Length: 331
Image 1 (cartoon, rainbow, N blue to C red):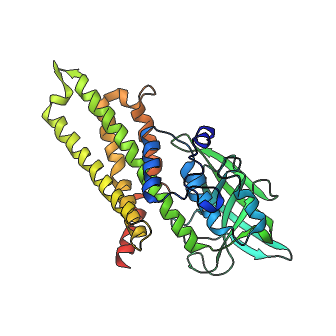
Image 2 (image 1 turned 90 degrees about the vertical axis):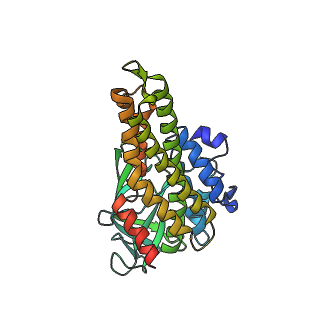
Image 3 (image 1 turned 30 degrees about the vertical axis):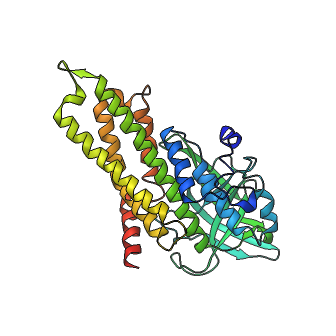
């Protein structure tokens, strides 16, 4: 993260009101695609594009929380979104964590199943329900909870791509009234759409890297006295995966040009659903072309595939991503 901060990449995706450059969809996609090509497994999307932008968008009426925002752009402060719960299937509506007003603040009680890149952060943005049933659109709120708050229990575990996630227990956690953020579901949906654009761009960059390295390998590796690239069956399989990559790029470009329009969320859902359903097969093919070497630590192919697995399973599985896209089409 320090290298990203020195390059100005931590501040770049953030709004200008907190020291950022206010990058639009095109620039965010270009940045994340380059990170994917370099297999840079850093929490830029989770801690900055998602949690950082969400904090910047909702901190207006939270004076105590605003103090933490100043350090996000410099890397001195890291925040993570604690929203996903066990019954949610990756959707944004399912929240069982309860929030109750106290004399001078709020009391939060519940659990968050998975907070990617949640280890070592300064605070969590925690979603909780003031009223209503778990899937109601109304009744939600957001609170900034410092990691050292009494009653906040963290359990760290490592994900498939090597990053560290956290599950949280909130046991009657009390926070000051000034730590409640403004807004809730609308801001969360908007920021999550930007984060999904970033994840899709990173996945496309990884696919670019895998396709380029596999193409070079097939052009140099010989079998039965001929280069592998000369075999027609392999050519057909490579063309099929090239088409997958190009379709993903087309859908990503559609999402980019839909930035700041009413079609943006739907376009992002389309590229998310497509990449989630095709990227793992793409990775499997690239590994197969390398044979046993494809899963060794010496080659980047195996590492890239693990990162693709993470990006295509979080926060939505392929099935849920397709359901979400279908619901937006029907709306």
